[in-house]
Image (cartoon, rainbow, N blue to C red; front, side, top):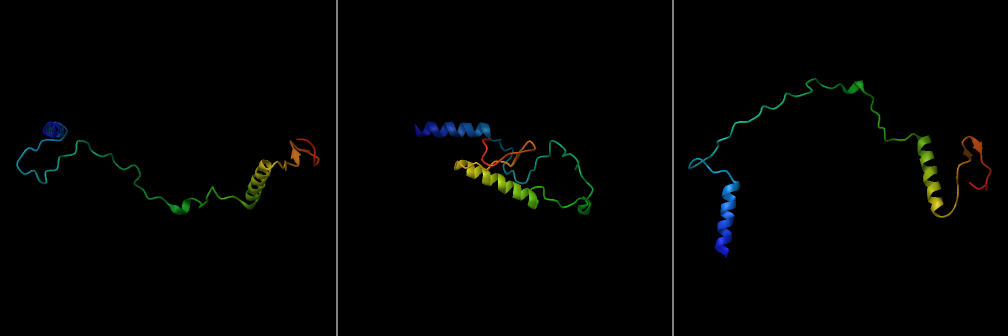
Length: 98
């Protein structure tokens, strides 16, 4: 059984691998079948032309609003309602159902 397995593996490897065409096939590099495309960008980019702005950084006002929203969501999980003071531009009294 082992002999049959070895012969089957040897047959599969001979099918899947290329056969050498000589006694010592060292250093024979096959020619490329395609030519690589030319580079798209050849000019250098000017780093001073664009402003160095990180869009993921928040201004202090945006950070405060985000902190307030997160606090309101956390308190909502505890059953405490700290909704907005104004809804669609109309002031909402404290303790009113929302």
